Image (tube, rainbow, N blue to C red; front, top):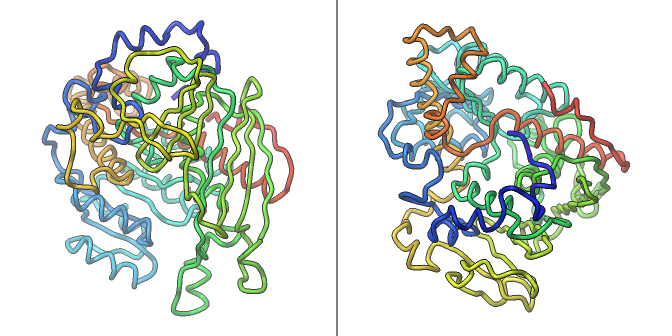
Length: 465
């Protein structure tokens, strides 16, 4: 996905506020800032198609730690995502996963799982530094791939993964940036691109959770492997392993590529007096975008106050993103766009401020979209729904492509066919390899800037394959 430059936010944009409002229904506009599942005519591209019953996509999950089990849980709630194989080098993890996937064949070697012809798609949730080898092998074996974010520990590995995904356009590759799979985000993006919030001037975010980040283990050897996030040789630290999702979300909405980054941090609570970790427990970094727009991100394992959120500041309004909800705070001199009257005003969202909330239950327009199944609104469920749905869509499209005489080894023709309107219309919102590369490069350089305590200028080549 090519990100628009900052000029897209200005009043001179061809896609202005009036054009946006004229072409958008009230239900859509009212849902712009809420964490809702849009239905009917207001559903984003692919949402209606996702309701159509599709053939099952047999899955194999590699890496059965906490993230792998979350993936298994989400897959178990989908009607067309049978888990036929699971893999982990630690027997206890495989045994535990059997509770979520009782019919899955267990493996201790991912190569054996990839050789299993019953597996059509693999979902990779191993430690970050192990991703490249598995992703490249999976794609070469003809498997569709979902890879958790960050994609890799190093720049070379991240670009290699992106290059491999690009090499096989007949296979679906999805990066684990779950926020991109939220179906309300494309509409929020249109809202921001229309300039309705004015011109962006800055952004900030935080992730705060007082926890050790350490997992218990039965022996010292297992503890080192299980707590890979705590050591520099295997982890991108808080910025990469936790912050990447909100950082990607904010950057995506800003619509600009980063110019430079600088940061700092330290072991302020989980220090040598009580722990042997190397990764900092409290960090801050600042990303510079074009036109002197700065994005500051604070992360800490030493305090939980205010948890996690992001804010984008425009000249006409600020937008607060928290969990699956959002609020808009308009400036006194901002123009009235008309749809505000449909919003519920909430006091106390931010100190002494009144926010315009557009959640699912705030208008009669959206009442029918309410669900009694909370898990359907989770980011992971959305991501799995998108991966399985898009894999089914692409598989069917490639069958048609071959029936018409096309050859899968002709990457250029496959790419052209894949970009046809019919496939785009059925495609569910998700993060592709280019989105994953962008976010991973930023995560890698954020961690590097923090560890070195210096400013790093981004190179265009880092984002290219």
